Length: 189
Image (cartoon, rainbow, N blue to C red; front, side):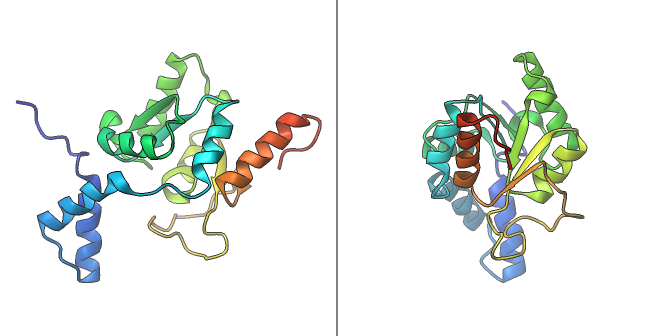
């Protein structure tokens, strides 16, 4: 019999932590219901179209802290835009652990890509932008909360890392990429 994977109930564990802090029901059944709900979460309104547009020009790789089953649901919700994916279940660690990014670098090099070929696009300063920058990746921060402030459901980063590129939505990012591809002589910002 296979040992249970410690990454299988990541969202359940997150729920348990928040439930205790917020005074919500924090039993195992409530955590399991939250874990099961993950598969029906909607995508951000601009993500499906933006990812479909980006897929026409680039190889897209999802790097996620969820398990393979949850990611399969996200992939479906997003319209199957990714050519490859990496989950915490496979790496054995969660972002922002630098080993996650090293694992990705090895995986992508096996597919013929070097770090200089990769643009790491993410919303989380804490989980992605800071550690990816430190690991030598070119980064693009999708700052969805630009007009709200704070970091939402992610921890406050030890410092805000200046990314190589910065947009407020995936749509804005995809628009900029398409404008750059249509006119390579124009500056990409």
